[in-house]
Image (cartoon, rainbow, N blue to C red):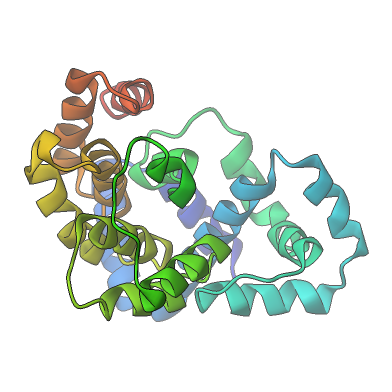
Length: 252
């Protein structure tokens, strides 16, 4: 990969491109498969580093992992599955750290992709349920889907959610998270919008609005992201502080 191509990718993620150059880059992403692949690879590495950067145990573990295991992880990650070996997971994140170090060490990015990388993390199933959810006990297949979700096996989890006979609020919400993890924000938006439109009648209303804003950032829908983030701030709920921080960066 040429340095010029990587420099364009880095500058786009950091939000350093003027409007005209940014639009030209996005057109190139649509027609240049190689550029698109390298862009997705850079995002993948950045997301992996973000996930492990705060865990000293994992950072230490990478020294014991071979280059072959690192490369295998990259292929595994793209398929939507996770390694059971935590050392392999960390080592893969470090494999191409030099490519994205400039992105991660700079001040907070103003770009939508950069903000998504900074603030997005998948919803924890237990954490949400513990906030007063009164869902019925799931059947065996749905229970297995949630087991896969908690393992980070998002393809298997999504398959289980999509096969459920009834599309409940819970299934819609966690299906949306699976779609975000699989780089499909459009389908995530389709699952989250009905939950947000239900307002306080939906027990997943606040997290659904938050992840809807994340999906809008991921799909570069700035106006929709701004509207969603403003609603979160006005509600002054669990995600208000983070939403305000993102708004400040988007509106600078």
